[in-house]
Length: 549
Image (tube, rainbow, N blue to C red; front, side, top):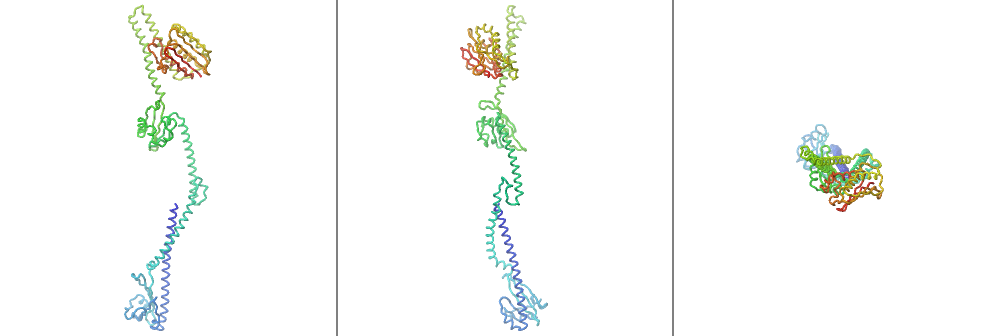
């Protein structure tokens, strides 16, 4: 801005100076020209008066170099000339000023010389005897005057431009200095020029508007950060060039990066082939998704393109942890397959025995055995269906009504029910501990204790024992079932609470179990916020502990 003001002031000064010089030259030229003509007129009339009195003698006494006198008779013959020999001069009757003087009494004319760049002014007057006295003088033309004044004018112009440049620079700095010192943070507090007051008012209004918008934007950004910071899902925002704009903590943990990844290409965050192809697809097709494993877990990456007014602005990547859903789907598939198998086995046995009886292929003395087999398989089928129903109810997470339950009487009831089985297996049942009362679902607590005790009896050895402890330990209510049975191999211990999982399928079939008992125990304990621990050694026995808060 300073340079623009400097150039404007300097240009204005130069133009004004040149115009002033031109006007001065023309005015001066006009003044000099008028003065010369007036002087010539005065000299002419003085010479005319002297010539009428003394004639040639007067003219001979006037010898001047600044003007020329010529005396001409009525026929145009030169009688006298102060610069030339009149005998060698031409007739002057045709000269304009001479003709006018002879005709009207006075005359004048101007003749220019291009070679000498000057003009000659002629004035003539008719004397009383009819002769004409003419005076002439030379003066500079406009061009000659301009050329004569060129060098002084150039010096004046140069000096004026230098002075103008100095003053223009100082003036420009003085004008711009207050503008450079404007406090745009508070524009209305400035007191500089009245001319820029409207501009400062507009800047102040825009500043307030921008402040409001920035405040709203900051608030929305903080809200977005709060939302994304607390999200369990990973969230990554990309721009149109696939550069990371934002990444929440869950995504940082997932990809193993920190805040330094912001502003970098997403390929530096994750270089896996499947996700890279999904990112390429979302920019071209608008949406894509891919399943991938990260850190030992299963994730679903959903990618969506962001557009505004028909232009691609970027993309968003949402990472959903679907490990539990995937496992649940796998468990449902396995459960369906196992249920089908477990239902099919007793049904086939029942159908086979019934067909033999129907076709008369069974001897009369063997019929009770076959009917007993049918009853046994039917009872097994009923138990399986009941266990499946109980598991379905537990899976649905329906909140069952709770009540204070005294666990001691529940255990006594279970002992009475399982005593015949224990006597048949030659297993001793023993209960220890003072018991406790807890708020819970009596039927589910019954299932926990019944299934653990029944399994301890089934998988025990003749002469073995089962000890059930009911009491308090370290502020927790504890149910502990300890047996001296065959134990569980270490490689199977992590899976025995899965549905239909059996360590020894042939032995389990002989024991008549459905394979769902321990799974029911797991879900029933979880519904009471209980924690199950298992300790087992082969041929030494198993201890299952359930702790309730």
